[in-house]
Image (cartoon, rainbow, N blue to C red):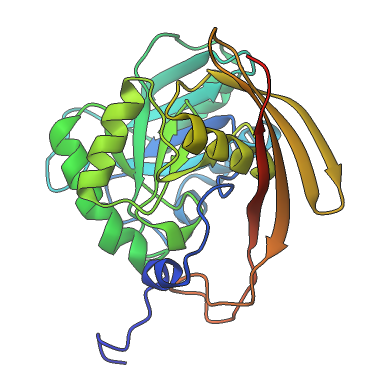
Length: 300
């Protein structure tokens, strides 16, 4: 196959107009493991670690539905000191907690298990994770690495390249954790603007895939509210009620601050026709998407 004939899933998704809102996977806990050598196709699962330690970390992660991501600093910069690990947690009350450590031998990674039960630190800046896992999906490298470079130049202490975060066809994809916010369809300029706005607590509907503590229909409803009412802070709106009938949801999104409205949003769920959804996936597959049928402004 020539380069001209090569399939790129992110390019195909843009041509199809695949909807972005409602595509963030659920998650409240992220485990980061800095790994400076080449990343296996299946990320952490493919690492050649001491089996007992590897299994303990994996089992503890499963117990809290944590996503384990391999991370590295962008480019050819030689990091100082031993590689790091982190546990990032989004609490239900909206607080964020982080625990960080270092590892030099496999057994040091067992500290992650203890950190999952520890409270962690508050008031640390979030981490910006840029999917650049080329062995998992070509588009993640082709589109993700330029974004990682641009963001690392601006915020070198906050930005890490990471393994697969889901939704290859929306590359370049970014996760801001432990805020639990997914963005997609980014390039270097739009990613820089988006992160700048996010760090100022102004989240825009453009490029927003969703909040990871919400269901996909709730994510789509909130994105529609932000598109209608303008950017807002991560916790400025709350889902007050969700009523489902078959593949339709009626969702009440309420502003938590004075002057913000309450919205009644009707969301319809659909399935796309089968498409090739990833660069590596050869078999066509269908994807869920969510259409905003109506949006009505209620009382303030």
